[in-house]
Image (cartoon, rainbow, N blue to C red; front, side, top):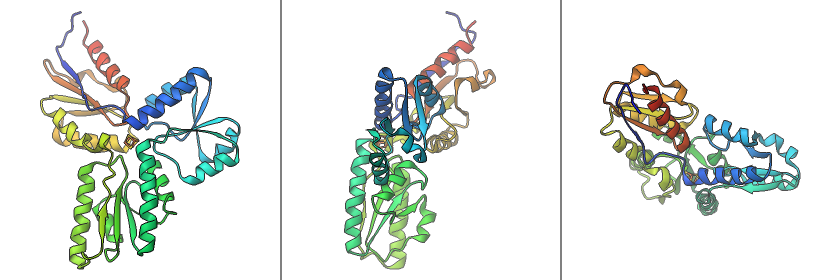
Length: 298
Ligand code: SF4
C-alpha cells in the first residue's frame, strides 16, 4: 500500500481504561450478549463514543430517581461505587443489583468507614482529596455520614483546621504528584499553626493504575513530533492529562473522535503519538491510528 505522507504512528502503551472500568464494561457486555437491554446507574464510562457503542448493544443510563422503574429487573452499579443508601433503595424496590464497583474502590469505602469511626472517637477529621461531584467521592463521603472535608487543591486547605487529629484520603483517580503536593501543603500549614503534635496520617489511596499516568505520558511524549490526545471533553482526567501534554509538547491536539483530525496538522516524516484519558477505550485509539493512515493513502 502506498501513502503520500510517511508518518510514524505509535499508540501510548500506558493508555486505555483502568482495570475497574474495563471490568465493569465486560460485565455489561456479558449481560448484553444474553439480554436485549441493561440499565446502568449513571454513565458507565466518561466517554461518549464508548457509551454510544454500548447503547447500540442495549445499554441505557438512568438516574437515581428512576431506580423504582427497575423493580424486578437488573441494574448495573458502575466501577466508582454507590453510597449505601442506593443499595437500600434498590433492595426496597426489589431491583437485582449487578455490582460492578471496583474491588479497590470497595476496599477504600471500608477504609473510610473505619477511619471515620476512629476519628469520631478522638474528635478528629477526615479530609478527602477529590472532586465533590465525582461518583466515587459521593460514595466515599456517604461512608462517613457526609462528615468529610473535600479539598480539590492546596488552596482549599484554608477551610481545613490543623488543630485536630487528621486523616487524608485521596480519590483513586487522582495523580500521586498532586496528592503529594496537597500533603506537603498541609504539613506546612501545621508547622505555621504550630499544630504538628496532632496525629496526622495520609492513606495511600491513589490507584496504582492511574498514579503514574502523568509520568508515563511525559515519557511517551519525549521523542514525539505531534500528539493526538483522544478523550471525551467532559473527562476531568482527560483534561488534566491533556494540559500536561500541551505544556510538554505544544504540538498536541485534543480530539474526541478521529473525525476531528485535520490533514494540515501533519508534516512529512513526523513521529505521531496517540494517547488518551483513562476512560478512552483502546479500540478508539486504534481506530484513530487507522484513520490517520487512511487519510494519507494514495
Ligand atoms: S482507577 Fe483504580 S480504583 Fe478507580 S476504578 Fe479504576 S482500577 Fe478501580
